[in-house]
Length: 150
Image (tube, rainbow, N blue to C red; front, side, top):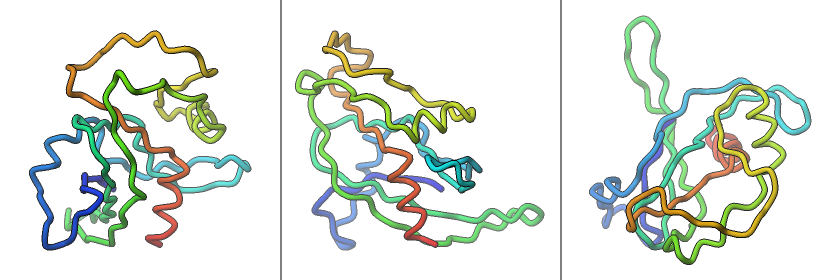
């Protein structure tokens, strides 16, 4: 599965591929076979490191492909677009909330995710240039998106 950036008010006629230069991080994910929050087996696409480098209201488009092992043929299976989310200036960001149970469960199973143990006051030290803004997508959102594609 891969992801690309879309403006919130974008229509197919107004699609602008250059906006994807504002998307950074791991933009592809293979299927992870993991236990969910109820300890049931499931397939999940985890995007643990996506960021958007400009402010605004956006959506992510997730596209699913099947790569044939022997022929290397690629088959497009479908796409879905996320709910809208706001990207704000770093000075306006109040800090990450505590990580979700499912994020911790995935991390315990070997998926590399940045986890926050408990909410705390901001001691913000910019790690990116001033125009770099972050957006994290919950693994639960990805599971929901994949469920809609199936």
